[in-house]
Length: 377
Image (cartoon, rainbow, N blue to C red; front, side):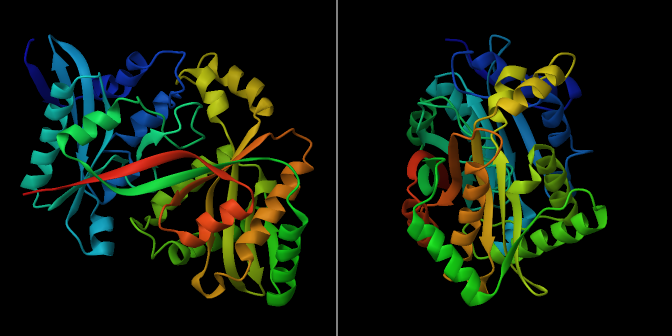
């Protein structure tokens, strides 16, 4: 067997090859969903990607006989380290053929880069943080992942663990059939709103000033509600704006909420149509025909995902989260569109409250994404 060569991505051409490798690795019959190539190009471009304003990332390709057989990133996240006061470095964007030697070469390259930077832990996969795609799919290969979640090769788990990576946290995706909620759940939501005097407001779309004010309040909740979570990384204002601009493309205003009590913001929820159902058909390209597929299939989406739901610390365990779900489910059930399936994802395995609530609503764990650590010596 010929030697494996690891090459750092330094040119525009190499970056494009890095992006396109998964397109060659996955078969059409698999559930992997191709990302939009133009978005990947911007994300990984050090001159344009918002991540590169505060941190650095190095991309690597593995070659055997001049053929690409794998890829990986090694990156830091200065905002993570500042927040958690640790020395954790990261790897991500992992893809490879089913070959332990290839995997070992990729992991060793990322490990060495992080070691030279002075980190004591290697964590991943994260692309680039918990605010983007995070974790390795280890259970739930029977169906596609919802929007902004990963679907990877089943053999990756063995490659990771054989090299010495150990589980540090599991992330759960709960699946539920969209149908009227049990009456007792609706009553809990009604009592919570009455007792604590809050109302749920929907994202305004026509008034740009009100929309900006609404989104500023979402950012306020984001900074408060998630700050104590495992792995939390605060976004910069530009990162948050970029995230909002991206999500707005997918969002329906009737599924984006904040809970308010006078001038006080209690929480937020964002429910998105599962555009993976459309992206699968576009094969990463918006032009020339991808835009036509997007326009045609977006009204045929049947799944909804809740990627964001947070309540400020002062109002946790007071039914605000139940009120959000009751509101979104009522809208979904009575919507002009036929929504079939919903997903709450992802939820940290140690988030007792959210796991309990998901089960109370009748949802079951459908997929498990795993984050790994390895000590750097």
